[in-house]
Length: 100
Image (cartoon, rainbow, N blue to C red; front, side, top):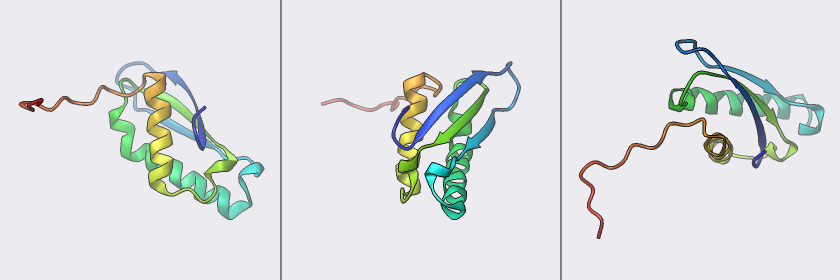
């Protein structure tokens, strides 16, 4: 559980596409707020689904703190949750980068 979302997942066989499910309960707010939360979570998944280490069936549960969050804040929480679970590929190292 991190920030404005909770991530639950199960691995899928290789070659299968990753899947997403989104849960927004009434505690998140009225219908407009729940719909906005779903849109934010789906868009964040769409942008980062190819960064996953392996195919997964992912269920994101929106927490009430998602209300009023920007897409960037939701994306930060999403990436932190997946990074903490070890679901993301390692970031590519800077080739030829010099360290002082």
